[in-house]
Image (cartoon, rainbow, N blue to C red; front, side, top):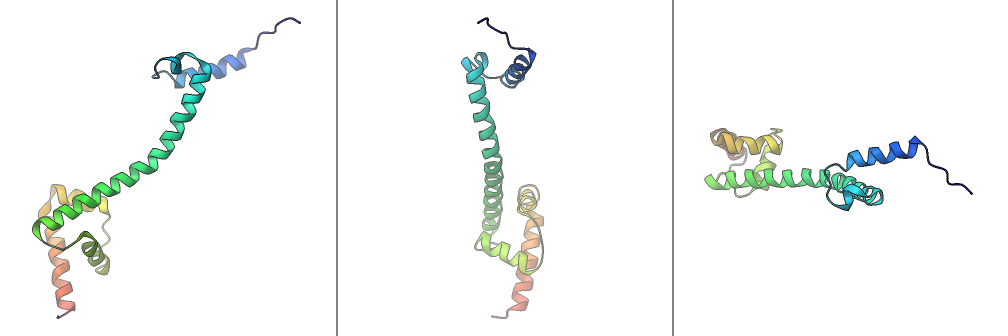
Length: 125
């Protein structure tokens, strides 16, 4: 039986795979089977790390806010500060609060002092 050569469709599919693997090294760049496996792994890691990146940034923002709050002794803890924000219905997200704590600490202290004044006025203990 004579050998039939595949048409352009398979070649076009492999070429698209190779274009994905331009920055890979070694066999991951040369061999089609290794390219396919590496592409699956790369896309899986990218999908997983998108969620992980969101998680890590949220942790970073919380750490920055907590450090800024405890530096001046505004609140005992981050959780108490966030709880007071929600009680006052000041809906700042953590990203904005972290940026304020880095760039303009006086603004963060004004917000926290306002919270403290209203909480002291509300609960005369």
